[in-house]
Length: 389
Image (tube, rainbow, N blue to C red):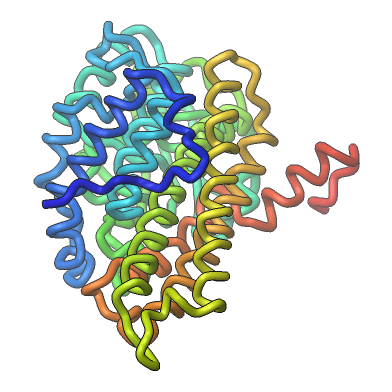
């Protein structure tokens, strides 16, 4: 199999360290050899390829920026971003799995958990002996998570949880769920484990998007959660939003992988597809589309690289993550749609990855904050006025 060469019009590789390039190329080869040959079949059957999980764990792709004390790789944030980029070149569902395990499960346990919780869960999650999920979104509260109605009530020895969560990646196969619920009106994080009485996680069916990903409901019917499963350092909705910021960072990088997949597919097709006795790549309108694609990919790559460098310096603002997530998701969708047009009728076939990426990106542009919500986050930052209500 030919290794994917990537898209790098501005020699951005020269700005990456040897370690960053090695990690990127290792994951790139994994995707080319293990993901792409099977992903269309799994997408068609609406199944997640769980056999990839142990390989991803062995490569250190879960919680890769966390301490080696917990079995993690201690990589920088640019390397983490490159991992997300390459995984999403395979499929958004593959990147989503790794993103949830890392940014939405391991990160909150590391940041808000007790030493006992960290020592217990982080090595198990890093090795994928245990799978996690993140329960914030509810059936009636997506963009307004503060309106959540899932509640925890303090009793002797622990808490009773009641409520429901929706659109939860990995939920049905998860061994532990990081669940956000209101305790006396204050949002707290709880570790809800598979098998706890009253806790169920049915899989959601009938998706036209993220078909090669497990999406679930989480239902809590008088679930007893012991005191030891409260994340002790959680003290409000801000902590849950900090987790989302980690996930948004990964998405900003990830969608560049889908951009590259769609652009590469369209470019190769345009050079070989002949109409009116010439390859369609020789026509001005096709070239205009391809030039727009490669320009926007380059801009997104540079945005991500600076985002990662700021994160590694501890200088990152959440509004900058919002800008990258907002821009890159929209551009990725634009590129997928233009690529589909270049491929013509063939663009709807799963012989090509374009329509699958386009469908996936309809979810990616929505989750972890919609395009509109990120617009208002940045708008408030630059004007000083909140337009949320």
